[in-house]
Image 1 (cartoon, protein in one colour):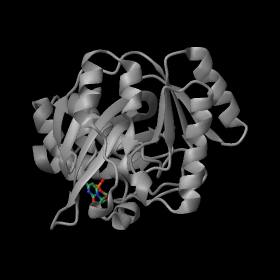
Image 2 (cartoon, rainbow, N blue to C red):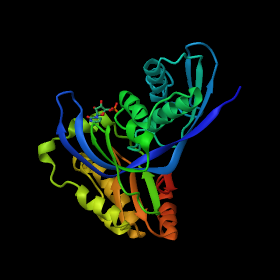
Image 3 (cartoon, rainbow, N blue to C red):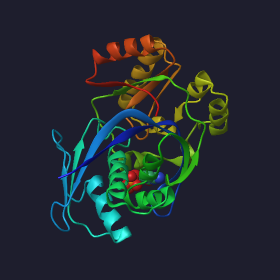
Length: 287
Ligand code: C5P
């Protein structure tokens, strides 16, 4: 049996602002998002048994049934396209930490949609696929698009931005996890003290000014962390800056922190030092 393998890149938030809580329980956001080389690997086999969707996640204890976003993506694909499901088996090799603010699940969902589109030769535009992604999760449309983008609304309104110049990114996930709905639940929009200047970040991207982009890093979720969570996040950011990061910030609903470096040796030194204390530390570059 033939198979198809695609990569599922993680995302980082260079800027994250929460504008308002909506009547449907979601929040209107304004974010600058970036895909990076840290990725899961998704392999698709089809023709395994009529109507079935089987998810395998070797070495991971994440659920593989209907709660799994890769499973949901496959279901949405078949129901939206009306394509006959001759049975798919999807293997996800997890490398992106879970509950980390890097859209690990959404990346897998997006990769499944792309893989199914290729496999079945579905005639869908990128916009069609992104719309389908919206049904799977708020970050899925961006994960389909990739690169550097401004995302608004729930996450489904995408505008391409000038791409982030080549750089090194150190990524460090603290041992604790943060649940996205739980953290959104803590947010009081009227209490946000300081917001990212997204037009300034856009201008810095336009100028290919890495230091300017990094100086604008901001994630309003950091204001809603407990004292203990915040202490650990700030310490990681401090370590990254001490070793030469141009900027460091928490991504998404955390708790992962990343730092941006223009020099490889500095990024490697930060990685080495953080690895003394943390088990999930990665070096990546923008895609
Ligand atoms: O869309 P997704 O399933 O990824 O969202 C997970 C949860 O995150 C939602 O149930 C909601 O609590 C929160 N969320 C939000 N506003 C967004 C995106 C997510 O409140 N724009």
